[in-house]
Length: 278
Ligand SMILES: [Zn+2]
Image 1 (cartoon, rainbow, N blue to C red):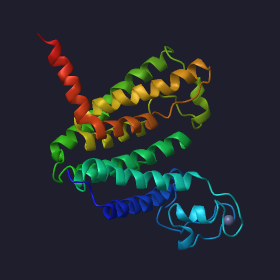
Image 2 (image 1 turned 180 degrees about the vertical axis):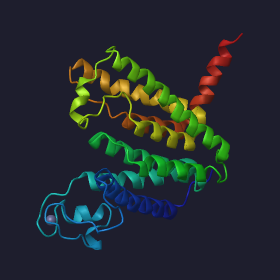
Image 3 (image 1 turned 90 degrees about the horizontal axis):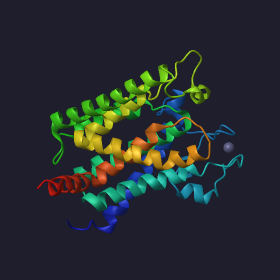
Image 4 (image 1 turned 60 degrees about the vertical axis):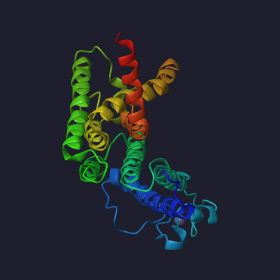
């Protein structure tokens, strides 16, 4: 596969950074049920609208030294970091897959995964705009060259929803019988809400992932996501810090792993199985 021209990569990275800027808006506003289109972005401290020249991804943050032009309030470093990350995601996807639809599908899934990880980590919620909106995008992109096709993407979505649905049903059953404890969830639950192991948002997110990676990718995502979850939460458990688990964060990690290295990992696993059969 020919290496893309540096100028192409630069344009893709700039496009990604601009998309990252929009992702920041989504991550801030969607959990608050605010429109992501209007009004224009404002400084959360002084309320003054942010001019376009103060809204250039990454560069404006550096030029303003991380402070609002008007009131000098600190701007979270998360904004330029997300812009940088999405810029790198899109450039990295083009480097990995070449300029084409495979890169578009991978970059979009990774961007959605990042948005979900950020909202889930902070608000323990996964906005439908990311999960269901992403599902529609995944189904549509399955029809592009090299895609899974509508049946493959639909199967993947159904498999993702069903797999996590089964995990949730089992977990909630154990929770209801006191086999596992759920009182640490109380702090994030609304009044009268019952504690559950997985939210409906996790199921919808997995359906979205499935529409991008297919049913094999779903299994891989669940496996890699659980592995990442165990690696992070086992040390936390050992430190006796009990906290609710934003499972979407780990599914996001698993989805990106499945998208980037899925074919390779599945081929490797299949070779292990066939090698062990005499
Ligand atoms: Zn301000």
